[in-house]
Amino acid sequence: MYKVPNQSSASILPTSGASSPTYRSNSALGRVLKSRPIRTILMAYVGFCALFTLKHILTYQAKPEPIVYDHYELQRTYDPEEPYSVVSNLSSSVILSKMFTFHTPDITDNIQPFFIRSTSNPQPDDITLATFILQDELSELAALVERFPGPISAVLHIEHPSETSGTNNPLKRLATMFVGNPKLRQQVDIHLITTPQTHRQATVLQQANLHRNLARFFARSDFVLMLDSDGSLPVTNVAKSFKDYPQWMEKLRTGNVFVLPGFNVSTTTTEGGLVPALTSANLPTDKETLLKDVHEETVVLSEKTWKRTIRNVDYKAWAVQAGTRL
Image 1 (tube, one colour):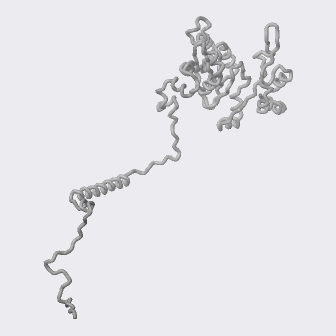
Image 2 (cartoon, one colour; image 1 turned 180 degrees about the vertical axis):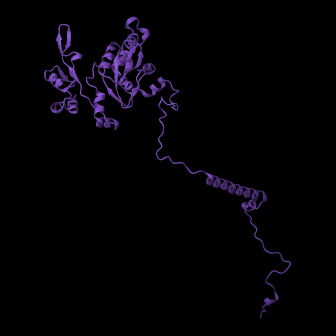
Image 3 (tube, one colour; image 1 turned 135 degrees about the vertical axis):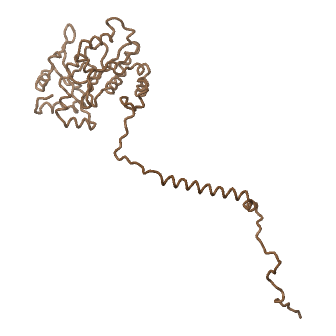
């Protein structure tokens, strides 16, 4: 037989004087976190984050309400006429080289905008005649100011003045014309291009769009009438016609383009060469006279064989409409 010991006689609880059990971590991370320097650094970091967050919260609360501009319009900072323009300090050659990137420096470095500026100040609603004048056809300017009473923006392309002397110098002839003609001084802005003679002919033949764009760009009104440099003359007051019809002006303001029909004066061959059937003084200025001249074939519609032109102008429909205005 075996004797079972009395369990009550042996205490299973720790007695006084015995050490209590403790948890001891054997990992390296635990030992590091329990070190005093690391705990000091962590407490400092937590305190810094709390102060930094509090500072941003207080700054946001003290921030003024944003100002909302419902109808604010940005200024045209590229407008050279305004003192705040960022392009005011750029030379014209740099600006033009950026505008006409496909043209050589021989062209863009020799463009002089407003070589001659007219004495008038066109209004925004005026219609400016934009054209290109050859140096051998300066007399066309005098004819234009007689036929067109409004502002004119003309590009003149000449050989370099130093290569032309005497009375053949186009700048001297131009100055003489302006001195003797007050209408030229009042109406015409001249934008000058000077290139060496070896470049000029190729430039005139190949870059006509450059001349048109320059004349249009430097026009001092919102609307322009493009006129080719082929001796064409306006026989009616185009600006007055548009101002007499407010609905036309409204279409212009909304970005519409009007195509005006052109007519050519017929010529006859003589021993002295080609002779026009009508002089500039006898050009028709009303519908009845124009229809009569077309019937007699002294005047013909420009590009009459170009179907697109006929369709856009629709001369036949216009001819039978009532009214006497061109």
